[in-house]
Image (cartoon, rainbow, N blue to C red; front, side):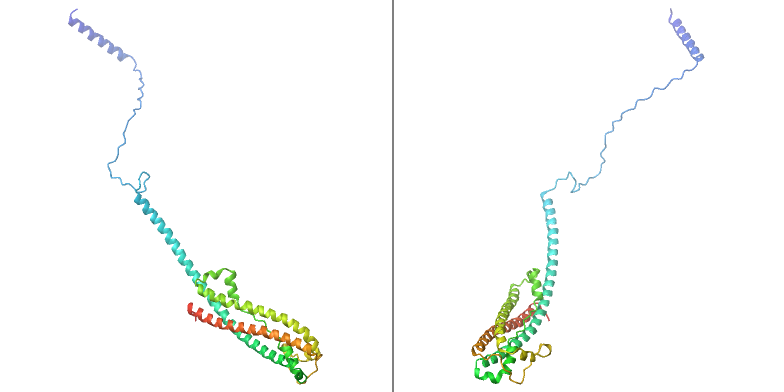
Length: 295
């Protein structure tokens, strides 16, 4: 077959197929779903300047930074401790001065008490001297019984010494003696208050001697006369006459004299300690006022 006839047949066949296709209903063709495509997008690093923070977790500190942080922390703690210590020191100094002011007030009160006690003890010693002189001169007793009654009743009396040690006891019992940093001041205060236990001991001895004295006196003096001598407010009055004694036994009178001598010696010790405490107290007041700039 010639080439020309072949091409004619192919063309006729194509035309026939077109006509068939045109006459046939169009079929719906479902679109094939597209498969999702995986897009591999590589992260892009923005082109910007990055500042490393000194405390970044990946930042490796130098030893100088550790040292600086330690010094700053130490300085903060030290300054806090120093401030608290200064504040506490200031508070303690104020409390110390308050205690000293109160102590000085007590010492001034003691000066008045001691002055009165010195006068009282001196007077009792003088009366006891007179009583001992009469008892030791039997020939003079009959003409001086009125005086003897008076002296025998009044001379043995001893008013107990009461110290004003309120602040001193507070300092001891509360442990606040530590507030007084000056050891010389502390020693002077302690030395002053060491006088009084001895005075109290001597007073206790005097009471024991007075008890024995009263046992003997009860055998010598008439109780009716003793009652007659009593006045208001525990006052003892001297009577003008010379009442008789219950006993004029020389030995009994000498025993009374012996205990009068005992009490006389004990009271001399009380008087000496009173005077020493008064001098120390006055010096201590002056010293404390000067050291603490008190008025």
